[in-house]
Image (cartoon, rainbow, N blue to C red; front, side, top):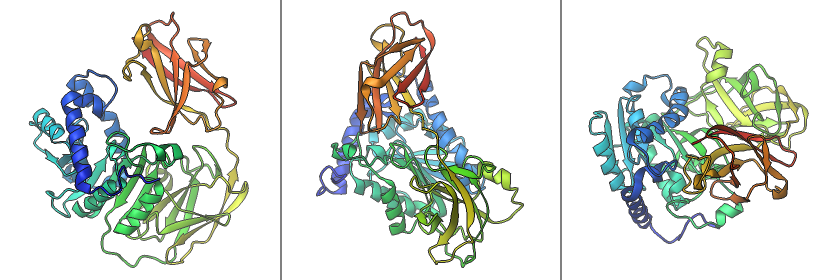
Length: 456
């Protein structure tokens, strides 16, 4: 089934729908529709919710986004700024921030709220391009919680194409979209809230089509699927003889065995002799025990690997990939290949079985209005647990929730295709005291998931 609501509609048709709906939402309650944690939020409370996203997705990723440059000297394009929840934090990091939104009402509120920020500039856009902005101007483009609300895949494609136009050569575009590919999600009507899916296959295809380097993919198959693209510079010859000089489990350079399933089923290879002006996730592949695997990251060594290598000025490239679940256990020959057919000498990696992956409670909210303010008593004491990793063959009758030392049967369990999670509803016990309360969820033979709430 197509991602489009109506395949025959034009980009301006979708733009009109997006402008109308988000203008209406901005007039009703902009803060709630941008960040659905509480119906009523002060400016300070609302803006503070943008800080963790900026810290996690921008500050923690500066090595990739800035390539070692001073962010205070760089220009950033923010796509889908709303009323500036993250813009105010971005403007304290980057020298110049241009924040855009399809909603003129959102942009107007943002301008009024941040009129005193001299380096933050707000623009209303068409929703499918950035026609008023110059080409080859921005060092970085960033978007989060935006494309997941776009109702048509071609509108997402158009935004990505024009973002590449406004980036300088070598500029980075990091964005999040829904990568859910389940049949249930496919069947859902796509609108300006539940948007079209932009899965890994589309990210790889479009980046190759528009000539963008595909630097990194993460969260494939989930609501929070991230793609990082780079606008290429003029190509250089590069080295046709890459070498694997180091490898390890992606999270720990010292661990040389990698499981075939779960959160740790990722392998890192450190390569000498790759030209990072041309190498990317579409032009580099890895053979594992004879199976071709496409990487999810190709770029400079970062974090724990940079520290472990002590590279000393060597021009090295990090390649991360997910180990295929069907790979045979035991010693496996791993070889890196380039689109030019050049290949590195193989290394041997030990593949091991993985322990069962525990489910995760991603969010706890009250059932009255969906806010994160949960009360020990009253209507907001009926809580929603959004749980990832319960599996397709879940037996609802075997799910139990432990609250305050008491085992409870959930009131209901349903799968939410738009978020690719299970929604579990449970009533807090009548004797729950205000303050911190531990919630544990167990299902069949899976390890329990846990979360801590602060009941009011």
